[in-house]
Length: 188
Image (cartoon, rainbow, N blue to C red; front, side):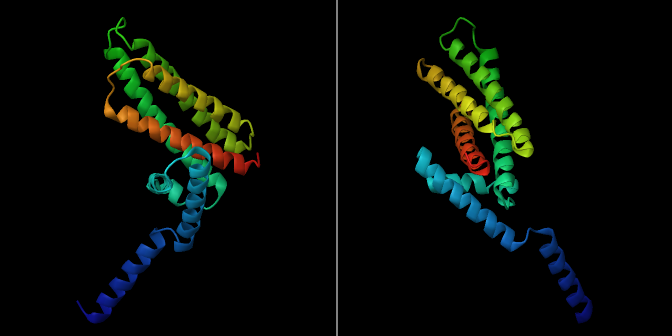
């Protein structure tokens, strides 16, 4: 291959890479959004700042968010996906459990809690898009339901798969981040 063709291929490849990736300044702004929100989440809810940034920054839509609305929607979608996964795990545990066994009621409470939370996150995405300020109320109700699940599980000895406790933590984190961002978005 001649040097001029090699140079042309190199330039074309470089341009393709630059055009296919988000602009560096967009990531810098998203990074500032994420850092700011995680700092507030740490101050208000006591989450570990680095863990929050790391968890949020893994999600591509969150990384590309350049404003509060985009960040809010991305976090809510992440919360919904995690709530759906956790709900499915609780449903599987409930279906595999003897209905008279210790902890069945707690597992059923968690199925119901995560069902409500999932619906709340889906509603919240639409609400943020529509400018509906009641989103913060539905997120507060979702928080209360998720706490009901935690309390029900704490009241009995229920063997659960590891992903449930881990995913439960992430759903709570994403809910709290979404609550903060939504409150800022609607100046509440």
